[in-house]
Length: 575
Image 1 (cartoon, rainbow, N blue to C red):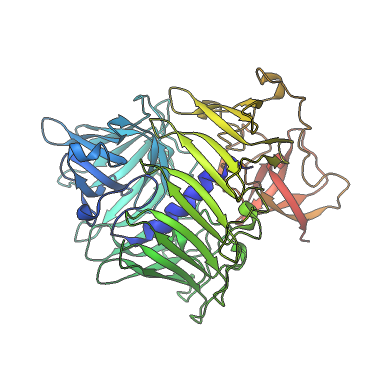
Image 2 (image 1 turned 60 degrees about the horizontal axis):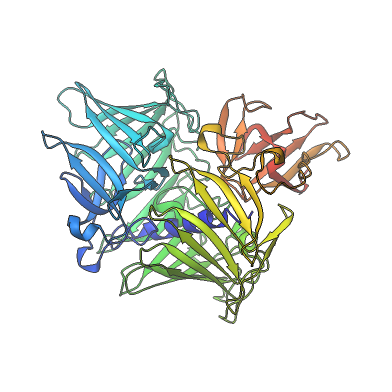
């Protein structure tokens, strides 16, 4: 459970910080000096940039351009190269002059991990190919190995995107579509985004979106409205329960207010199953209205407040009734702390499932390269505390020259080494290290105690051998462990066993996986309907059937299917 903490925290921070719309980027993948702060612009020239986003139609937006010399010490940057015709033909994420695999983002803040994209210009198509840090083919934007954008005659903008898998076949089962259709307004802005299968038939994607329509402000990429329309041309609720979201901008083109609307165009509370939402400027919005306040030093978000339909402070139930977040930054613009508050502005638990009920603030420190090096847990008295969930007061991280995380360790309130008791795994450890393959995938985790003695090691599943849980750090069977064999763990029991009465049960997806697959049938060979984020609540239907594979009937956001019962915890019978 504890290993996935790092990814969850970074996802939370990045989601918070992109709402600025302009100003210095302070997410974990880019940083630029104050004198190079700039608004996003269309990418038209080679060079080094501190921040980059891609629109779904393949158009890149960049900011914080810098010299090659400065880029070597600026953390992660994007190197843009052009061909003999001055057309962009390669973009590479770099750190210290070395290609690195990081999270790239589109303008709706979906994230995808890879190192580079190469661009080919064909007769009536532009093809994007995604690469790992060693330039091997790998999934990129929208989980495709490559995307071909069709360019119609006499038009410079793509009209269709075709997504291909590693075998060169048109496919994208993970997201429920294989093609995207684009429509533009009279200013050349992307105004409509629609989804289709590999035959060009319009479909509703896994996020319950059929056709997204956009409105913009005065600057490139600054969205002021996103609306989801159904087949009948009327507003349709997405998986979030929201049909339309509007964004109010200030004089600096920063998002200061987000409003959520239902299909009847009245204010509506957004569904927020957990803090790891995956959408753009809405990634850190909740309730019916969300408002953002900015500081005057780093020009970044200093407070995020959630309000109900009556514009009064509202506690978000699924987040433990958090009503607002306060954020502080270092002089360089790095996030330094995040604290959570209730509707009466008193401190409240930041995330009970991750940190316990006594942690209301996180303080962050970074190394000389900008990597997150330490997270310290604070209580209601604004003092370091031992997290009741993790059993530690701080967590420290280590990295290699490629900026890959290579280790983590736990410490007490006095900075002393401690061992945590991972009840899910059944053993204690002070820390662990990772080993990687040539594709930058984690292949091995080694646990050790406070005396640096090895406790256990586990082989990890890689992308090439995906398990049904979607768990990139899933443990193989105990018989495949090496050097320090342990007794095989007791296999997880399927949820809603036969002795339980038939009915519908509420269950929570485990936090120690990347996602849980909702499938059309009770096996890994059945089609994927959608990926359920960790920590999400789902319904388990127990009807007396027991599947040998451990699959159970389930429903998520109204979508029926099957999930592996090994990765959910039943909380109680609903009906």
